[in-house]
Length: 456
Image 1 (cartoon, rainbow, N blue to C red):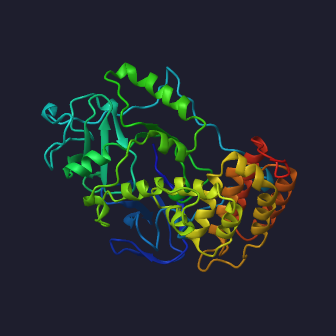
Image 2: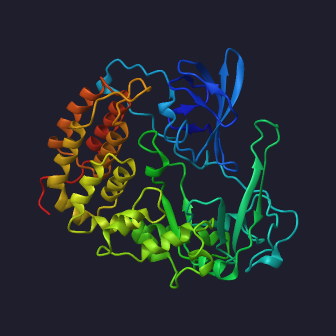
Image 3: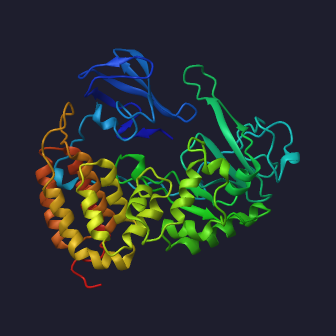
């Protein structure tokens, strides 16, 4: 499958909008043009890589995922411009074609990881020695890799995975080469032995299956993309492959109407506080599990500063803390103040609170929330974003406001009409935001939600 990062894809003509220098020291200037001939994500180095063809020569470019400036995930649009699609009528942009539906004659592709040549039977049910090679598998056992599932994974260079059959839990670090420079692609996972108390404590966290084929409404920062996720309690077990589908079907039914926070609360099996090796080591690669545990200890009456801290978009416990804030009596004021903040992180908190708002709270807030969101859109600064043609300085804020409207499904004439008017106005200043508004309008018109004038 071809890789797409933000609005960029292979064979995409691009124009550089702002000067930048990549990790290898290659400098491109505003106005430079080329065609993307290669694009991908290097999870070993945590980098985005790109091959840009200019006048027949190809330049390999590398960008750090953790960069705070320059080209990076969620900000490629600020550095690379692409030709605008042409439509006969900009008000009637055709919807994208539906994704192909897998069928028995055309099943979705499957991938079987390469297994180590030596047996791992001796390590089943316990930790393998440090730096044991697992080839491309993630768990140190001889069970079918189709029964392996990663544990819920706060951002880390390490991966923790478990076997649903034998219960083995293994921490690994990945090494490899995608082959774009050497012509030889390979990947290997090697075990990372954890202290006993840390291994036992982490083993109680849910296992997950994430559907990364789901797409966002438009190219956006990864912090706001929610991929469909199935949660397995730590005591989930199926010893044979034919037991897996019934187990997953049952879990899917049980979790269908539950929020992310509720799924976490009902599937985690952690009763004790984090062990000292994790709790007292802020730099530990698996520290995210501590932050997730701390978020689960909060309630709506907890200190607001603690709730806001854990509700930040990059926090492992953000869905939990955001839902707790949404259940407070002052949730609407907190949400609107966050969305109106000049701070992008606080704006993100506002969006997450809105996304996690339970139906009863939404019904109560809708009469005030809907017109307030439209008013915030109307008051966005139309000042141009420096060095980025066709963008307003408040683009990020506008994008989150549109995402909020879409997530809340506020689709009545007193929403759709002013939003349509705003879309036409903003199209003269920021085509990207106009496209986002068009997507939201199409979605709201197709899937009507609660009226902001309905009584709770």
